[in-house]
Length: 432
Image 1 (tube, rainbow, N blue to C red):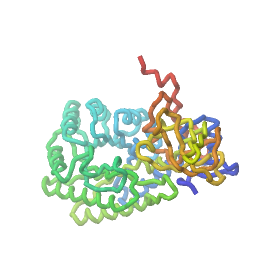
Image 2 (image 1 turned 90 degrees about the vertical axis):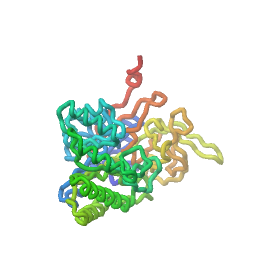
Image 3 (image 1 turned 45 degrees about the vertical axis):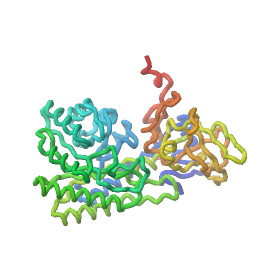
Image 4 (image 1 turned 90 degrees about the horizontal axis):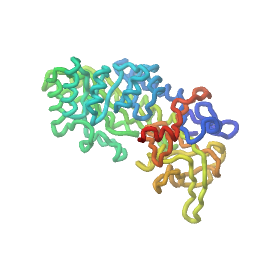
């Protein structure tokens, strides 16, 4: 049993994803390479959409947080599945626009959008811009006025929730670079300012309390805090806001010991809170937006590497070196993130070795996992790192001028390239 339902072992003893033999994929496309299962991605999107339909009577929108994995094919899939797209930069917005993604379903995030990015968003009629600070609010009003438009926005609020996650990925507490604080009165002041602006339409409020959260309580608490603010706004201004964006952060399975809740559990419990608490406060249940990212693509992807050297240091540790590393997966260096590793060509064998898997970069911290259990490996073996569908390609770099990896999409055992492998020429093409 692996961390994702799309991962299995075939009769050859090889690891498979979406019915495709990973050893054959490594031979066909080379390594290192990212591989995704399209059916798993689509099924996850459909589960979230189903939850909106069942718990809010369809009065909501699933918005895929594309920072998890953004490329043209992901945007096409989201468009086909009828979801929205959350973008955080001009580059992500350009990618969505390049495939004709419906702009009314685009949500533009970011704590420091540039003037050019705001112009780009307004020009292309982005449906919702999540405003992070007063400076941005004022700039956006000016940009909208210059184009004779009224722009729909939501204000990002810090609800002050401790989501019990890694310090680097807590985003809902007061000491955060994101959003307006409740405790200081900053949030209410921003609401009143936005309501006065002639080229701004305040559609609602947004919050995001963190990432890789397994507990239900923080989501429920965030919903009540936000609805209390809705009530205060109505009492103080006479305006009842129409939309509530509760963000994402739903945890996934990186290790067998992880116990994420089924998506439906998150949605049902939070919906019960939203529906009942809205009624208690005398509010209409707002239009609900949710922003799953990692939970859509994380466990639907893996990364394939080829083993180079195996270096045993007696009484210390064994290093297994691979042909990728922190350039294509920096998350262990950043967060000490845990992963399940499998020797793909020996997947049916027992894991009898304890090793440290090291990348090829000239950096002592270039490690993928330490003290991990794996099958006996030797040079030429294929190692699969599971649950790398989110924040691996997105955070990839050209450190040591190593070209970025290709991405391969698998569906019903068939595979295709959705992102080409970068060449040395492309790494250097912007040099003068």
